[in-house]
Image (tube, rainbow, N blue to C red):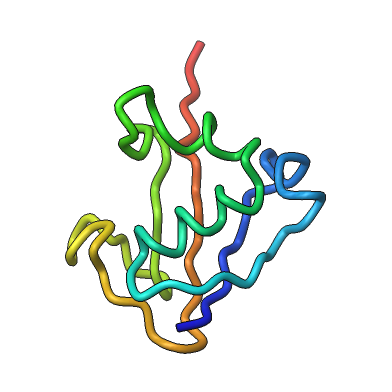
Length: 92
């Protein structure tokens, strides 16, 4: 299936300046892997050394947090939108 991945502005420089990229994949894992296959500079920002999504990176499929469905195995349908949202911490 073809889906759009929305890249946060802080990472667009690692995605050829693109804020949105079309990818294929049957699930979120496939789509993200295809994204980093095309834009390898994103890999270190999205994945830790064990190949897991970094703890401060949140992924949404059509505005729904994938942690509350099947996580990276969440099925992607034609025209879905995947959003990569880094956590923002603040403080003094």
